[in-house]
Image (tube, rainbow, N blue to C red; front, side):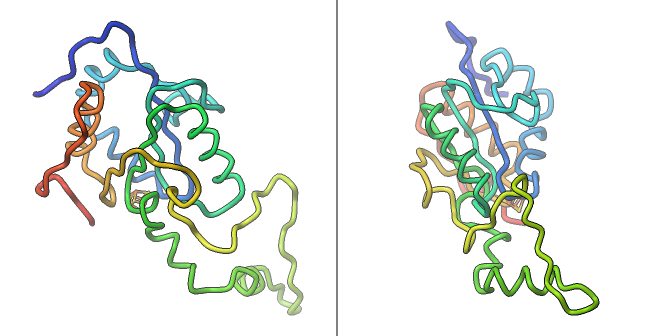
Length: 183
Ligand code: SF4
């Protein structure tokens, strides 16, 4: 098992899911017991693993999911502002993936269909707590600069491990073809 050496200081790692299915985060957990070697090397900042709500200053940020609404834009910009290296993980983040299938539809028409009452009236919820939908779904690199792309739907645990160990040891991450997965 190829494990990163223990660093002089732990790097800070943040992860977030925008509009995705959390499958990429599930794959992150598929590194299994290697997560023990990972936490020797990194400290988690904002992540579903920590429940920290806002991203602090980080060495690495990993983003899953596409950009569908105003909250996604806010989270993504916060990550870009606080992470030295930003990684787009998975097809949704990289090219919009499944969420982008709504891009050939008109958002107003969709909402009109979904929120039509039995009486034929349209009652779209407009609570300020609900994030505003964007006109279409965007890949993350159309909103902020991305340093690395980790493809797959989802990338396998082995691919994520290879990617992270490359990054943590100062190598340019490189995923060979057998490790790429789209299913
Ligand atoms: Fe889910 Fe695939 Fe999108 Fe990852 S890339 S969030 S696994 S649909």
